[in-house]
Image 1 (cartoon, rainbow, N blue to C red):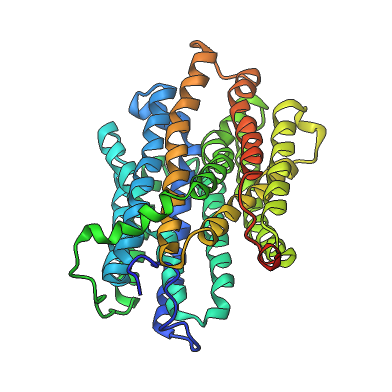
Image 2 (cartoon, rainbow, N blue to C red):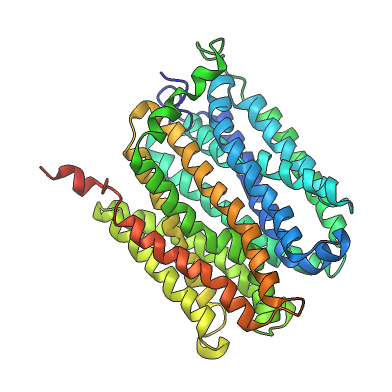
Length: 423
């Protein structure tokens, strides 16, 4: 067994029976994944407070928040290899600890400390999804793994929604924004302790003494495959409207652009990850049901594009509240389909590395676009307030990204079961 089939190495514990200890560890890891998404999205409801506290421009704040994506991208490559090489007990606990430390540091009203904290948040968060699927694969029979992955993704997006609609009333009620980060860090620290205690110790892999560089050998196979790059590009483009758009600038767009009340702006922005909670499993199930990946990928992207264009160019009262944000999130569930395709276009001994590679590509794109959007907003405003017209011009980049993703999807290889039956 290659050391790089990290997430999908299920043969030993997942062959036929439940492994209770791994299932318990997986349940705690769901809390880890929830907190990862919550701290990713929470800054969107406190942009004015962060700007004032750190004395940053719009570009500076975007760059600060974008550090999360840089470290996530880098550590996505390391996380899978580390878990497979040394097991989950120590590596995953270290990941949760990094998230806890980074979350607490972000509440310190010193810009460089917050920057280090945001970087650590992304570094720790990179372990969450890989760890959750790894533990589920070792604790559940193989027939339940797909369902476990769906549950994992849903819990993560619920965390993304909670980072907005729970954080907003807290920081404008019983807590100041700094306390939110301190308490969130404390909660995450408790999860780290629980995970360390609950996760079983595993025998070291036979190749654990091999050169560290050998761990990354399958990445050469993955990155030499043009389809891998197309999958990463397609998924990355579809993630931008949620990771950079809704989870960073969504509240500001609706509050300053649409002139909605703050609470309503937060609730509407939070409907994007709620839509993802439903869209991801539904679109994934339909793709499996019809045995085709590309039609559902393109259909989800088309729904995203329609919702994005309606948000940008139609009056807010055209549709009932929350509908467009929900549809945008629902359609963005299609962004997970390239994760299936990249595994299916690469050999079995590189499937774990394929997951790490697509995570890397997706979050590098988010890291590059996040500060670029902030710069574009600042340039359009030219020292003035952010208006609806400014947001529409800046956010048109997200509509263009979705349209480009549809074009890229046309060049992906169809890997569904029906395509495999074809002579």
